[in-house]
Image (cartoon, rainbow, N blue to C red):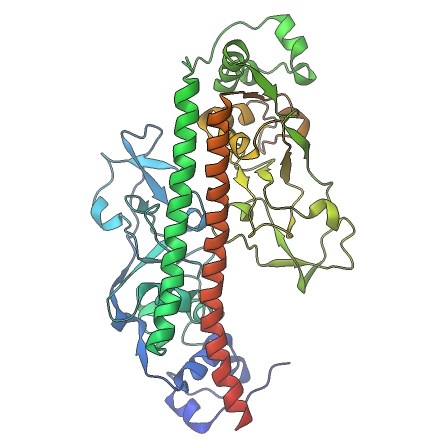
Length: 458
């Protein structure tokens, strides 16, 4: 049960004079009351932003060619650690691209659907467009952009982003909602520390993306397959009998994945994915018991987030298969349905958390370097091989046994070693970025909580 003491002037100074508990004890109203009584100067969010806006709705023409298209970041994609694999829309048929384009150092807020999620943009966002579901905040130089981001990302900022003046959860965030949010001006040294943590996290993510991109480019340049992208042809009975589970459908035998498979087996020394992994598996389906204070639980899409956090927790006592669900640092994770073909290398943000049975776990061994195996699977060639054995009509799937035959090319030892070391640095950068961002947000929350505690003692 929630309780609080509401003063007369709180009621009198509110936008509407209401005495009902549902309003006075709502999260948004309670947080505004806490901020109003803070020991520091308070400004409105709109006063420390050059501009708060969204692009509005427009007709989208999707394309596949990177030369004629430009990446479009939506409210879900903006939260991902890797933005290299998002949909493209036509440059020719998209008007006012300059107003839709993102730049580093901005704050993005998901303003429809799942509202209130925030992102501090880095160079990975630069040059991409954002959809109408993404609100852009361009900070002035008055307060640090990283500090403002950490504040809006805190539980206090989130409460005010997602709850309107009348205490109810709003369905769509508008610029006017954000511009009135009160922002406490922390002491300068604290502001600078929080701002630096967020900016350092953004730089680390930039470095991680550059390392992965360079490794993938080197692998693809070394292999250089000449794909025909053909979609018709003949398949022998021998090929069908030799395929996994005697696969008969055309998409398995005539596809980019099929061409890549044949090319690697013919032109390179290779080892199967099962040879270079000590296990390729996923847990069995299980009953989930959600609790408020349990073990963090990640779904299939959560593993790709810049900060892997699904906001869900499973019971420690009622979840029977915890060892099978828990992931370790350095594993390769991939969804068995949904965005099949995308992979992630688990870092400290994933480690010791429970992950859904819809995520396949690959545990690299010492036969080939794990970082190299991950970089290959992250390439366009690896993705084609992962997608080759997809099955299902409406909801497509891939299972662990289907992946075991994927051929991993064996390149020169020094090249594979170099790629492995850079991928390990890539992983460490993402891990450190998570820690810095979480620390910055925690500093904001701890400071605000200290006001409330001091107030209670008086």
